[in-house]
Length: 462
Image (tube, rainbow, N blue to C red; front, top):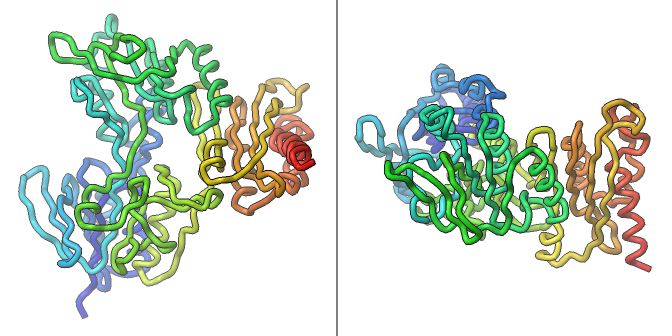
């Protein structure tokens, strides 16, 4: 009997995790695996790019978990610099373009995995394609940025403008600051980190100011300015003009689903492919999708959303590979946990923001507390702010946001578990968390916030 053929579109986290897991379950004589990757690299940490640009990570290859050669050694026919340009679902085949030779060809499949990832948001504004304007979604993007920085005059060209103040924006602001640039962050929103409520985002803004990063809120970019040589020279906004020797786009990403859309596959309200719990594309028995190109179920809000994170992409790949390889796996959904930092300031969130709760019709209460990451008397104790959101009357935990230093961010994992379990804030107050003065006060900040939220729930119900 001829081997089935699995075709994988995309050679990073979701795609190669799916291919590797399928190979573990089925040998090459039972399952032929062909994977297409349009870039130069596979199986790498895109989340690590800001730290490579900053110099915290010494070498690009440190971000690569598995090379193309290592995948090929496992009987995966990985074709680099090859882009799938067309998907013929009725014919069960894909059209590929070899970027090096310019040749195109069709490859048939029995089973297909779509892992096309996400693309940086790049507004169609004048000058956006000028030399010196960079997105940072892939290793190729990171290398292009570093090459651009190396070409600048080290003495005279030291002004960086970061457009956007989400996770990518604040991380790239830190990276450029560490490289000795004068950094301005242009943010269209009310405060940086729109994944937080504005009151918590304000804490991030204050900390960035303290680090010497200029943050301009309410600034919508209108055009990229260029000099006589055609290279970027500044950024114009409705709030003023800011000189720049390099511009980094940190506006965010959107699902890369043009190929799937053109083939008639179903996409959701956020532009991502829609799948069932097994990560199979809705209505298509032999097509799976995972990673940054899909929408996932928000377990708290009960709606789908698009979240571009490597943690999810690797889990999707494991689930897909198990199902393709004859095993079984599901991906039930997420609670929206994410952490980041700008220099020594740690930023974390999970669950819903206030506006998310309102959007799905939930009534809620909030509580915000200030504490420290260690016992107050222990050397090195630093402040931490925790905001908690709970459903009115039931007290069900809806979301937590944390901004602080010295181990603040990973405390959000306690809240992520509580959200997944559907716990109330009152139940959380009894959690048996670890305690010792070097690690926590007697009452951990998350539990202090839970206690205060319990009081808010009771007060609102009286």
